Image 1 (cartoon, rainbow, N blue to C red):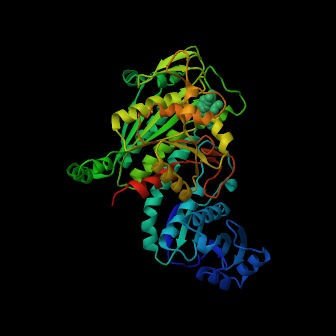
Image 2: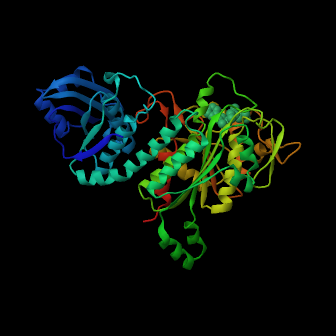
Amino acid sequence: MLEVSFAKPALPEAGALALLVGEDEPPSGLRAAADDATGGAIGRALAAANFKAKKNETVTILAPGAGLSRVVVVGLGKRAEAGGRATEEAAGTAAAALAQEPAAVLDPGPVGPAQAAEAALGATLRAWRFDRYRTKEKPEDKPKFARLTVAHDEPAKARAAWGSLKAVAEGVFFTREVVTEPPNVLTPAAFAERCQGLARLGLEVEVLGPKEMKKLGFGAFLGVAQGSANEPRLVVLQWHGATGGEEKAAKGKGKAKADASKPLAFIGKGITFDTGGVSLKPAQGMEDMKWDMAGAGAVAGLMAALAGRKAKVDAVGLLGLAENMPSGTAQRPGDVVTTASGQTVEVLNTDAEGRLVLADVLWYCQDRFDPRVMIDLATLTGAIVISLGHEHAGLFSNDEELAQKLIACGQATGELLWRMPLAEAYDKMLKSDIADMKNIGGRPGGAITAAQFLQRFVNGKAWAHLDIAGTAWTTKDKPCVPKGATAFGVRLLDRLVAEYYERG
Ligand code: BES
Ligand code: MN
Ligand code: ZN
């Protein structure tokens, strides 16, 4: 992770400088100092480049003098309209332009300490890289950006704001790592083992194997897992951050308060590789299915973030981990399985496996934890990618208020959601001739019928389902997300907790 510090504005003796600049704003002190020290080189370069300070517009000036190796200037659009998101993105864009510099000073411009910390977050998120399996990269080709100093008049305040954001970045990186790992390395057991490492943050970690799942009656989950030589796991992560105080107070004050003492629950689809099973997927692009565990990855990263920043909330994270393989022991199209809820499912397509795993985990979650809300994340359907592309994740919810909160947090973090419908008519499409339901509803409305399927296992609890099949992975660099695993959902749900569910 990028090493971040905060200091009063001062030109670096040597090395690089980055400036975040709003449209029509006077040069900051550091910008003026850099211009003075270089005989006006920065201003001349910006004029020559016809720099307008549009959002993420970037000019790089090499060796302008005064010992500076590089000055990167990034636009923000209009400063008055540029909130924390624009600052983050501009800082992320700057970090990409600084890849060959070991260290840089970044001047976010006239912002408060919170936005200075957000600049550090943006740069940190963009500078992340996964190179565990590169053994032959030449040193000159490797990114070098390792140290960032954010210039601010109140460095202590900015540093204090950075504490929580750094924990969120660490959560995002946990997610990006597990999502990026190849499927031969990240089996369900290996994923569970990494989760056990999160105990160091104060999370309570439980791992259940096939024996325990069988006792719990997880017929749908185990049906998916039975074709693989790699055993399934259910990981339960608990964070007790609300302490006892509120619960004790709640007992005296009756029902409304008592609800606030129930945990929030997050559930993730964790298919470490999805071949489709006997309903085998085509070869083209099948490698993408290593990230079919991105929902579980996001839940683990979110729980790490909450624990890392000591969020004042009680939360549980459940990860349904399995591999969907075709083999002599694999389930067949036509099999009927009995879920933990007692409802039976005719498995007509073994590639609609995520909903089968989630059916048992959702049921178990509400039964064991009686949560305040349940939110699941799943790379559930190709149909959501057809509907929304890669710009929004699909949001399905039986709770108006929860849906609105989620949409607002999506806008604040850039992890955008678009509400999709749930309705009786779609639910009917799941009717089976032999069992309580079938696991597919046909091609029309495929993301919706998948959500309807899940809804049958939430037992009326306030619930939201995020179909992240289109947003969990990006093939293009974004300002704060290098191409690859996005960790979509970690920042969104961390924000949801901070805005609406933390006390104090
Ligand atoms: N993991 C896939 C969905 C997916 C597709 C995720 C593309 C990411 C990118 C899921 O398990 C799946 O195979 N869904 C099927 C369901 C169908 C058989 C009803 C699909 O979307 O085709
Ligand atoms: Mn599938
Ligand atoms: Zn899948």
